[in-house]
Image 1 (cartoon, rainbow, N blue to C red):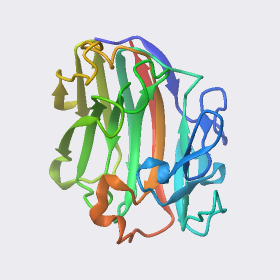
Image 2: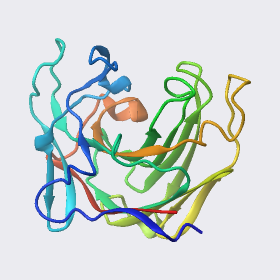
Image 3: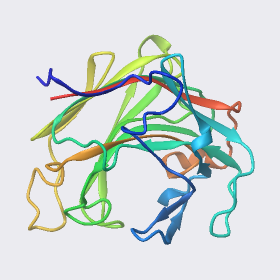
Length: 257
């Protein structure tokens, strides 16, 4: 299933392919007209995203998190910098298979992620129109990875289904692994190194007019980032201890239909 390659990023050369990716800047979630809505990207994150924290070299993308004073934004100055990229407006798809190979530094407070958001929020603001987290990790739990979907209604009436997997043989996220998501009309599955670890085929919406399989029946786009702190792992957010600079390294990303 889903064997036809429709999009690929192998990070050739020495700069990010601007035809494929947008670079995000700052710490604030902004409105459509650029006004500040909430800091920390809505998740209490402590990093300021900059284009300078990206490096493309030797065929991989490196998102580099640093402990350094960031530029002030709307009266807030973050103690860390990192990077976030996405394909919004440049590539999105509806149903298929996403495969990528990656590794990440470990340590309290690191939050690497490869995920998807709807190209158009046809069912309403987050999370009424859905979110698919292909891969997330907590730097203090280097042998675990997480795959999650968010749905239900507009925050705070949203809910989620989270799946956790242990990497085999004592391995960690700081070693290269192949992560995979299979998105079908009636189910979403997660795999590590070709081995399935979770499948979800039930979700719903608070709005009874929105019927299953919505909201996961629309085109979604890709995001890649390395956050510091945040609500995903509050236990380590107040005790951030990785060896900086910390690096989230992506070898390739491929999408099949």
